Length: 281
Ligand code: AMP
Image 1 (cartoon, rainbow, N blue to C red):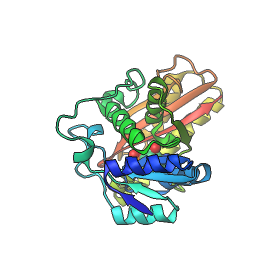
Image 2 (image 1 turned 180 degrees about the horizontal axis):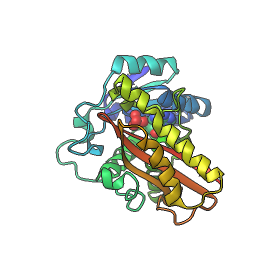
Image 3 (image 1 turned 90 degrees about the vertical axis):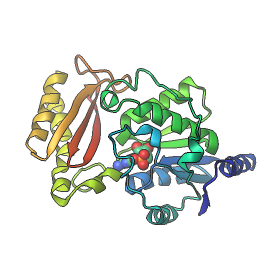
Image 4 (image 1 turned 30 degrees about the vertical axis):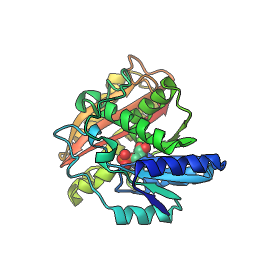
């Protein structure tokens, strides 16, 4: 597996690959890789001649009181996993090179950034959209792969690609879960054994919400109450939000029609965990 750390070299390599007629699939990550990330890599492998992953803990998507300084970094193990998934190239830029002094341009996907995680993470999606646009410009992929675990991020990136006429296909990938249903996440590493056991309640609460919809419940507030009550059974978990939203606009639903995004953010110990179900009625 080739390793590139420098932006100019990455740009030149991508340009040469494209010129030789090779399609490029790209997986942007923040490292601390797990099966969720690797599922994106495998999908890219099946659809492109060359698969490039990036590892970059993006400083501008973290708020001042968030976990940028403590975000898990484990390059040797990440490289091993990427090699195991037969990724062709890993791009590992430095923060100083991505955001040199004087950097001042940000991409704001206005409306999709506002609901759900928006109020709890001001500036987060602006940081995500900005770094993703930079990475797409550098790696020039035909396709870029994003997990539905970060559903709002996926919608923001899709909208940005459409609005700014990017010549990349944004490919959504299903959530990979642990056997007890917990969505895989780099932040699961923050959980103590007790907290890890408690974290199964996120998935269990979404299952309860889905069952309520399957029984015919169409009032979003009542469905959210079912989800919140389930989470409430777990004393280590504290709810940031539970929402029943339109899967495209992410705005709160007044009534559940043909589809609903049940989304939540919950704090357990030091970890802020998110999860969602896209439910079709
Ligand atoms: P991150 O390293 O957390 O920024 O994630 C990099 C990419 O992997 C994003 O597109 C995530 O949505 C995706 N991802 C993270 N966890 C999972 C998961 N459990 N299942 C599927 N995709 C995931």
